[in-house]
Image (tube, rainbow, N blue to C red; front, side, top):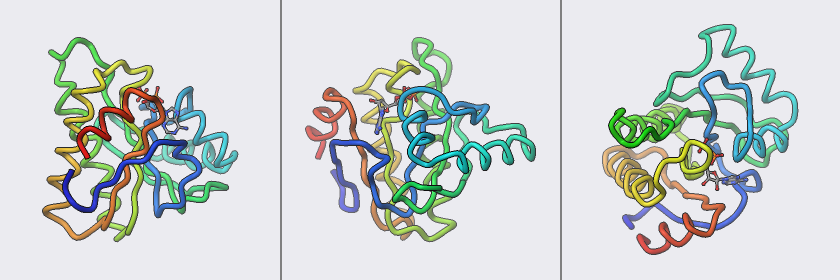
Length: 171
Ligand code: ADP
């Protein structure tokens, strides 16, 4: 794995980073998985911030990202991105997943963040094959970091065993 990228196993809500990335849904309504965990740990201020974005721009399209405060999280902010639902691979899923990583990193770059942490976007309820998702995530982040000075570091926070194994094998 190229420099400036790390892997850890654990719960992303516990991480002190400039921002943690949320695998959100287009409505920014909170939900299960990492989204639910982030909303619970951040407190109601996060749902309020998401509601404000909904009022302003109707939500967040697949592949795009938006920034909110972090509420009670140790992280300073949350970058909400929406990964694609896996429909078998013929619906532009790979490119949309790449875009979700890039859009999140573009916000981190814009805000000159030092450290950003990603969960394994789309690999839970959205059903994206984990191996392909790991390849896409590492390539997309690697390309971005090679091009830009910000963010300085990216951590992939793997929660389930299979993702941990896949990312560690690529380290
Ligand atoms: P999606 O809808 O994008 O698939 P999920 O939340 O269902 O989102 O799953 C995305 C990934 O987040 C999964 O790999 C899951 O193991 C992981 N995950 C779930 N809870 C946490 C957490 N607290 N911290 C980090 N990753 C988590």
